Image (tube, rainbow, N blue to C red):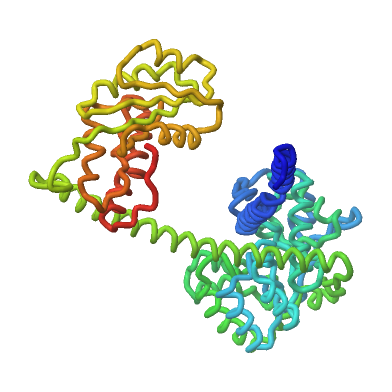
Length: 514
C-alpha cells in the first residue's frame, strides 16, 4: 500500500495531468464551433445576407462623360488609357443574360440556345457562380462566353476602388473554381445604354478599364424583368433596320418563364431574317475573352467553390436539424402542458391523499451555507416557524463572513451549526446527512425562505411507500422586478411544469435542489 506522501504525490500528478488535458478536450468542440461559424458566415456572404449593398444611385449629370462615349456603341474600351467604343456589325446579335446562373432558368435558356444553334454571353454574379458552378461549366462547354457582373451585385458608383477590386477578384475566383477560366468582359450592375453613362458611372468605367476589362452595356433592352409578356419582350429585343445589337435579357432574379418562351420564338424569327447569334468577341472579330486558369489560382478557385458547396450543404442540414428539433420542442411543450394539467387536477382534488395517513414524524432540515451572512438569519427564522416538527442543521462550508456566528448567536432550540473547511455544497450536504437525527431529510439553500407549511407539505408524499424523493414547487418571491418576473417564468416553465409531467410519466430524471 502506498504511503500517505506517495498517495498525495499521485493525486497531485493526476490533477496536474488533468489540467494539461483539459484544453485538448476543449480544442475539438472549439474548432467545430469556429468551423460552423465560418460556414455560416460564408453562406451569408455568398447569399448576399451580409456585406451586400443594395443602394442604387439616381441618374447624375453627364458633363464628365466624353461625347463619343454617349454617342458610341455598347462596348466601351478604356484599357491602357484609350477611350473608344465599339458596335456589333449589322445582322449580328449578341444575346446577353444577367444575374445568373439560376438552377431553374439557366438550364432552360441553355436548352433553347442549343436547340437553335445560337451562342450568348452570360454575365454571372460571383454569388450565383459559386453556388452553381456546374452551370458555368456548361456555358463554357457549349461555346458561350462568360463575363463578370460583380460578386454581390452592388452599384459600383457607391463603392471604393478597393471594394471594386474585391468584387472583380471574387467574381474571377468563382469563375476559376467553376470553369477554370478568367474573363475580360464586364457588365456593371444596373447599367443600361451607352448614352445613360453619367458622371457617377463613368469614373467607374474608366477604372474598370484600367484593370483590363471591356465594359459591355447594351443596344436593346428586352425588359424581361418586368414580365411584360412574350410579344413585348420580343418587340423590345428586336433591333431596327437590320442593325447589329447587344440584347439585354436575364436568366435569374425571379420567374423567367416569359424570357424562355420569348427566346424560343425570337431566335428562329431573327435567324429567318438573316441574323446570326454569336459570342461578343466573335461578332467583333476579337480574341476570345476567356483565359485558362492554371496552378495556384485554379486551386484557389476550386477550393472556394468546394467551401461554398460545403457551407450550403452544412447549413441545409442545420436547417433540417433545427426544424426537427423545433418540432420536438413544440411537441414536448404541448405534452408538458397536457400532462402538467392532468397532474394538477389529480393532486388538487379534495379527496386526494398520498397514503392512508399523513406523515407526522420529525424531519432534519439541512442548510449548507457559504458566506450567507446577509440572509441566513431570515432562512433559519422561517424554518423555526414551521408547522412540522424539525431540527435544523446549518453546515458552514468555510464561510469568511461570520455566517456560523450569526446562527449560533440566535440561540434557537433545535438548531445546530456544523463547521467545516470549504469543500463545496455536495460535501456540506453529505456532512449534514451524517449528522442528521431523523430518517426524513429536507435540503434547502442558505438564501431560501420557507413558508410555515413548506416542510409539512414536502414530506407528505412519503406516505406513499413508492416515493423515494420529493422536489418542491419553487416560487420566486421578488416578482415585482423585470428580472424577477423572467426568473419566475423560468421556474414555472423550466422546473415546475416539467416535474409534473415527469411525475405523471413516472420518469423523474433528477430531484433538483430548488
